[in-house]
Amino acid sequence: MEVARSPPTAGKFVVVGGGIAGVTCAEQLAIDFPSEDILLITASPVIKAVTNFKQVSKVLEEFDVEEQPSTMLENRFPNIKVIESGVKQLKSEQRCILTEDGNQHVYKKLCLCAGAKPKLICEGNPYVLGIRDTDSAQEFQKQLTQAKRIMIIGNGGIALELVYEIEGCEVIWVIKDKAIGNTFFDAGAAEFLTSKLIDEKSEAKIAQKRTRYTTEGRKKEAQTKAHAGNIGSALGPDWHEGLDLKGTKEFSHKIHIETMCEVKNIYLQAEFRISEKKSLIFPKDHHNQSVTTDKEIWPVYVELTNEKIYGCDFIVSATGVTPNTEPFLCGNNFDVGDDGGLKVDDHMHTSLPDIYAAGDICTASWQPSPVWQQGCLPPIGEAEVLEEDTQTVARGRLS
Image (cartoon, rainbow, N blue to C red; front, side, top):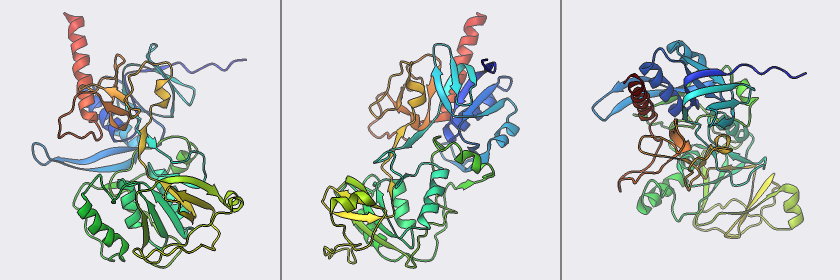
C-alpha cells in the first residue's frame, strides 16, 4: 500500500537558502508583497538575518548579522513560511521543488540562494576537514582540542584567519603561491605580515570597528547535526569569535609555511607505514630548515609537491568553495559558468524563465567594469527585480 504524498504547498515566491542572500531576499519580498505567501526553504534550523540596520550615508550602511532560529523570521513576517528541509530536486517545467522530507512546493517565481560548499582536496577522507558554515567551524574546534599538529591548505581569508588565531598547536601552512594572502595584499605587505605571524602573539585584543557576526539560538544544533550532508550558511568575518581555537600544547603560536607547493598525496597511518617513506619534524627555525626525520606516529601524512612529507592530526582544506548547484541541475537546462555557478544577467535572471539566483550559487555573465569584482551578488536587488517583473506581468493582464 502506497503512502499518500502530502499535497503540494504553493507560494507565489519560493526562496531556497537560509543564508544572508536567501533571508534578505525573502524579507524584501515579504515587505513588498505583504498579502502574498513566501516560502523559504532551508536545510538548517537557523537562518542568518540582518539586524540593527542603519543607512549611514547614500552608499554606506551599517548592520549586524545574527544567526537566529527560523521561527524568529516567521514571527517578524507572518507571510513567510520556513520549510526546514534540504532540496532534493528542481522540476522547472512543472515549476516545482521537491524537498528531502518528501514534500513538493509549487512556485510562480523561484529565487535560488543555496550558497556554496567547501572545495575539499580529498573527498571522503575522515582526516580532511572543510570549513564552510557554523557547524563545520564547531567541528573543527572540537577536533583541534585533541590536536598537537595540523596542516592548513589554502591561501584565502579563512586560511589566514585560522593561521593567526590557532594557539597551542603546531600549524604547517601550505600555499601554492610565493607569498601569503596574495589576493588581499602585495608581496611587501605579505613579507611583513609573515614575520608577524611567526612571532608570538600579543595578548591584547584590538577592538573591531566593523560589522559583527554573532550566533544566537543554537538550541536546535543537534537537529542540524542529524543532516550532516546539508550545506549551512557561509561564515562571515569574526566567525572565530566565541570559538576556543586551542590545541593540546601550552605555547601560544608555532607556524611553518611551505610556499609554492601543493598536496601530492595523503596517506593514512597504515598506508604510510607500508610505503616506507620518512616524514619530517616540525622545523624549529623558519630560515634554517634542517632535514630531520620525525619519529612520532601521526594519524595522517601529507606528501607535498616539493617532496616534503609531514605528519599531522588532521588537515584543513581551505581552498575555496564550489557553487551548490547539484540539486538544481538534473533535468534543467541552466547555463552554467566556468566556476560551476548558475549564470545570471544584470537583473539576476538565470537562463530559465522565472528563476533567479543570488549569492555564491551564481556567476555574473554580463560584461563587468574593469574595477568591478564579484562578491556575493545582491539579494535585495534580486527581490526588487522580482517585484518589477511581477508588476509588469500584472499590468499586462489588466491592460
